Length: 328
Ligand code: F6P
Image (cartoon, rainbow, N blue to C red; front, side, top):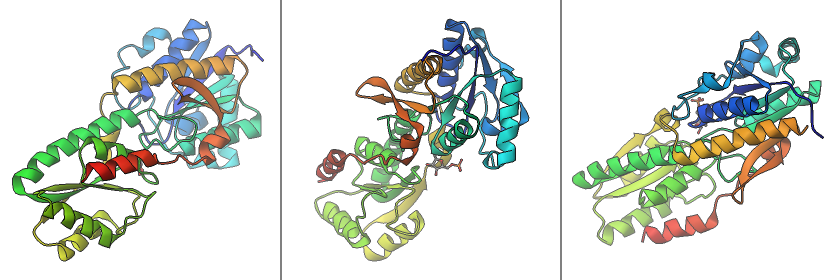
């Protein structure tokens, strides 16, 4: 049912991801297009508790579609986990006459949005912003594509030095619980092995496989390791194990870390952010709440926040097979 909303708030929360600024821009401009006000909320739920709001008009978001990070800043709020914190946040929303909220973030941020909705019946819509691509109900989260391009660029550079020195490199990429970055960037970067939390290769099989590719004539190798992979305790222990159990390779480790979260968003992420912002605002105006907007089958679709958080994103088995065949 259409709602007579006159003012929407937007915040970014949790780990930042490239495309968040493009999403803020889209929410602000969609509000302007529909002749309603938009308030930017600083530092995620922290800013909601502190009443750190600023009215944003269409011109206030100029020149940010190409910028990484988030102009609204982001935070992980402990106080919002308390009932008192959430009551303060709700009071501030009412005082500022904000009648709907767009939350850009990952599963932790969506959990916060859902609690706000449940306790105060406050309308919320989520935009999935995380490089990990670990949210159910969208084939792509905001920032995933940019992070992949960043990682592939890094792998290409490391391969130059790996092949010059005939070395084996272990490269750790982000993905706390999932291997989407590792699997996709690994294939695109021509990795010999890709280690992801969803599949337990085992140390012996890893060494066997590396030995096999060495015997087949390879003089250097790249192994991509998702940070959530459980094969070794950590990537340095993995390196030590391979060092001890394999001859002929000088082994090095490279942890890519937070550089994967920065940088200008790709064309794909800018378009995705623009579509998601419009869909989020229009969903609130249609009276929809407690949903996440996502990209499914090329279209903008809504998924219940509960499902988006609890649903498991499955690794693409066909990609796993392709990666096996490519490392032959
Ligand atoms: O944004 C998700 C993520 O990149 C994870 O892959 C990683 O484990 C985590 O963020 C690290 O975030 P932080 O250093 O902000 O705690």
